[in-house]
Image (tube, rainbow, N blue to C red; front, side, top):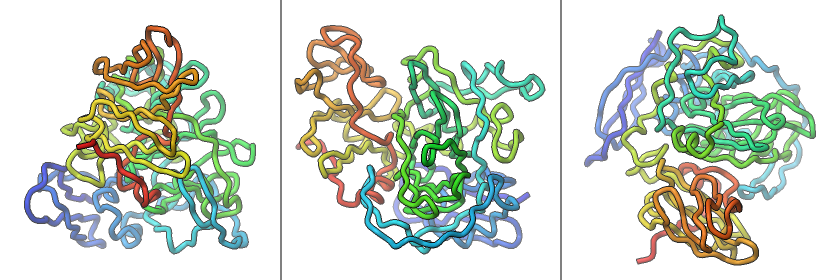
Length: 430
């Protein structure tokens, strides 16, 4: 078993430092410039679930060379696509920017073998991580891990029910093939901090998705079992393969903490880690899901780093040809942001758990102006509105839900900029 040495993220200090990795005797050491003070810890690299941690630490450098050192799972579990003729490149406008399709292979980086990061294919859920009643008794752990209230989750509501997908699972598996109000795909890219949830169908047919091992614009690239096509996670669009140009229908999702999500959705179910859930590699896993893979515990943001610009959390809104990013710290300092994007009135705020929400602020044909009511609610039009759900909890609008202004959940600023290089970045006036 190999090990690598990494440095936890701590406040910046003058000058740069080197970070050194060692993965077995063949790979040697890879120096990477880092601008954080060194706090050394040694982690085992004994399986595919640890490999994206290394890639995130490298910040995308040297990915191609490291792929061979990181090993192989012996090929794809979900099958290999047949070669098809390459269509003529053409510009395509997606819901997350314009791109020329198909993407040339030279623009993608092969970081890992396909399925080296094992997607979840048969998820199991409980009321919390102490509830394993839905899992066959022989697969229940003697001492199940605990999910702390501050642990980040991707939250989804469908048909009046709610589910939470902890990042302590998604950081290691990145893709969950679920059935929740129909076939559902839940994805998370640790390099981008981006969660994208969609209907799990291609050309009207249900299919299974996996992790291709490739990156495009530093973002997760998936593949589907039905066509073998490669999908950009953030675009939710096929960027190469037989189904080039096909898109997925998105489902609204929230980035929150487990405690915050559970308080807003008391009946929610939460994804259980293996051996409760099954991946393309089976039930077994050598991951300690009780421990966060990334050192976000000392940060204000639910994910990301307060003092690193590229890893600042932003919520992005696109409307009428304009794209605007709202950074967490700026929004939190302002309390609430009443703005317009492409002429559309929006309200943006930070949640107590360290995430961001953005809603359209037109209700019953009237444009409302929002103010802070308390830490968990806004006030407008004589009603108070819950931050995490956008629902009016009292007053004349009680029961009304604000419409989300953002199609994608909050993500890292560097990822937003990769897809929206001309975006306006909101700054607090004065």
